[in-house]
Length: 269
Image (cartoon, helix red, strand yellow):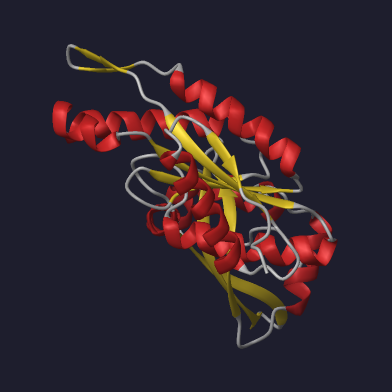
């Protein structure tokens, strides 16, 4: 079991773009990027008579990478052990799977996480913050008078505004930050490792960047503003209490005239 192709089916040749005689001169690791002769031989050595099925990647003769499913099992051929395998191209299936997974987690209009995914990420970040004794800040953002945009210019204009906001948030957030659309025009941002001062700096930048947006919808140029509520993780918080405090901060910002930031500390006893 030296890792060389002893024989190759016509379907495998077509899939990889090689002739039979070309594949018979090659080794498995030459078509499996990331593998080594040692890793291939170790895998062949532990392959049993019952066989196994696993996913891998094959490189075609012209350099294209294919996601494949490989089934292998050990046989005795002419009194010597060999490993037989069948390989199927599953690239289209895997691509569809990734699309479905993305649709289950991403808000398609803004490209940010949807509400269920954002809430799950909040639970995870809260647990990490407790374990690491690290700060965690949450921002809740709402577009001011967004209903007027939809009523006056139509829902297409509103969609353009939301998409532009999603782009703006992705530009200012760190890789470790998490942003999601949790309502019609309401967005939540999770800032792991960031305390109040960092959260306020980011909120001020977001407020300013949004106010500078100019979104064209037909013959109209739309300008928008936003309000932001900020809360930081306190002792005894869970997801519900942290989000509730952030929501109250947002409502206070809107009640105070909008286009501003409000911070709420721990709830009074």
